[in-house]
Image (cartoon, rainbow over all chains, first blue to last red; front, side):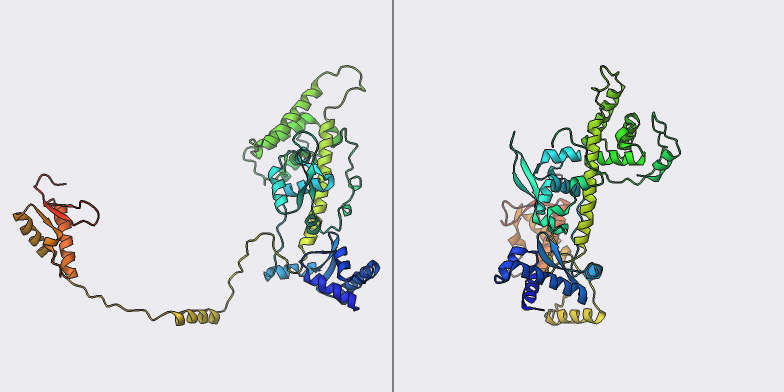
Length: 180
Length: 257
């Protein structure tokens, strides 16, 4: 491995969170973006081809070393690490709406889901999956919510655009009578 | 939903104008619905009806019966949608006035909401898959979101356990052994002494009965004697304030407590 690959590997190993590309660049200021990209490719290939228990994943706009899925059960059985809890269906629905319609207010989410979502918004915000991103115009200037970088991380998304566009989903909506 | 409901529907037992009554004692595994639209959608799926041409009367009736079955009666959101369904049903029953082109299907708004909801459910499926994918891989220094530490089950061999016990026993001090010798109390003698004392004077004090250098057994005998006599009503014990000297008063029979 060339020194740059080793440097990146060491940094990725040290970080518990994905490292954004610009931070990787700051790590090696003399390297060009193309060199960094090539080094990341080399590292990923090294893990994949040489057969390692970890892999390099591009997540939430950054890079992260993760254990391979086939060892999860053994690791969990030995209680070395535990999978985070699954979100409830209600929380996932709320999150899905926010991911697609952000910035969006509570009332609009409730209109789509047909139930009150106040407490779910609060718990999603506490888990740092969503955050207040602004206030709407109009009466009471209601809070608007959007997804966070942790959302991308926990759903293994590189960026929001990785989710299929609304018109690419199996059920494409006919043009709504009024904009939501 | 339950296979039984689907089976009934498939049997053709469901007429267009209504649903069969569920037999008494009908037992189903209640699925958890995340909201009224979820319930309505699963109903439409179970009944295999066209979402663009929902038989409102039948679906409304089924919706209500499921609310009742799931005991969602107190869930305002379910009732709100039920009311909406009934209103659409009523609107469909009204005679149509005017041109056919200007008539708007009262179900249109509901269909739009259902489709929107179903589209969102599709996104939920995607998120669920991606979330599971990410959850199945650990990052280094992964920290669980919850601060609670999961206690590992106890796993140790007998020799480890014995070593631990040994270690604890070694640091524990030799226990101090007290020898307790039983001494007989002379309650009867003390009672006689009290009786003779209060026979000649109306009141006495603790100090009059127990000498300063009394042995513990004498003190205890006197205490028990006084309590016994007080119980028998031969005397009264009084203490004007806490820690004051106890006064022993001769009690006349009949005045007994």
